[in-house]
Length: 278
Image (tube, rainbow, N blue to C red):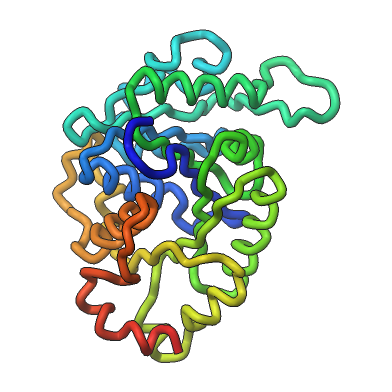
């Protein structure tokens, strides 16, 4: 790692459907806009999707599992994924490969966590990555356990429903027990209108309920979702809104140690900041 800031950043949640992969891909591109090289590792062995989000599913001939097993070299599994050569992706397997938890007898085909971590670190070194984003699946699965082994920072993703916020707190406690010292909360997607209408919990209450430091909010953006559903290759005709792009830029800046106010540059929300915290 050559740039100041946390080298290995994992996204996690005990619940599915909160947008972990959306945050992982958005944050990776934000770091690239800062001139950094980024390696994204899909560690959701149960439901891989980042190759599709980045539009490189046809280029992913080898996976993180292949690199961990020694089938290929780690740098071979790290395929270019755009952003002028600054972004690389290690895909997760889709063939049912599983991670050995360390409990009981190891079954045929299971991969040691230590081998996964070694492959990620070697790939990061080979592509000269400044940041490594580790995207995990729902719950504290084998992929999350592997990511927690090497993560400097964990971003726990939650919507702003009470159930999701409670799940975020549970996830953070598990990660801390696994050795991740720096944890933070990302609210995604953020529904400001519902919160202002008192139909959603205020941000102050979310912080209190989760017991986590709020690292950022990603406003709801229909165009962001559509941009991830279009044709492969990354040539999306539907570009994300400025507000969601700015939100990811803000999160990346904070992770790099910059003092960036919440909702900075998001004009339609910045003026309502005080009301959102009531």
